[in-house]
Length: 138
Image (tube, rainbow, N blue to C red):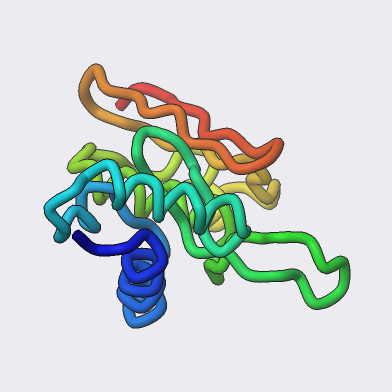
C-alpha cells in the first residue's frame, strides 16, 4: 500500500509538470486506493499547494509576493481557470456577450466577472474565495 506522503509527492509532481492550471480528481486515481488519493489531494489543499474550486476540480495556486496570500496560478486569473474547467468537463461554452463586445471593440467597458455562455443543462459551481462563475445561456 502506498503512503499518503508518497501520493502527495506524485500528485504535486504531476501538477507542477503540467502546463494546465485545472485538474479533475479522477486524473490522480492512478493508485489502487482511491481514498488515499483523495486524502492526499485534501492534504495539498489544506497546505495551500492546491485549491479546491468545486465539482471535483482543483487549480494550481501560488503565494502572492506582495500580500503573502494564496492566489490562482493562472495568467488569465479566475476567468482562465473557469474556461479551463468548463473545457475539462466537456461543456460547450463561449465568452459572455459583454466579453465578446469588449474583445471586438464594440464596448469600452471591461468585463470584471467570470461570465460564460454555456450550452446544455450542466452548470458547475466553480468558485475560489469570493469569486464565483456566472452563466448565461447560448
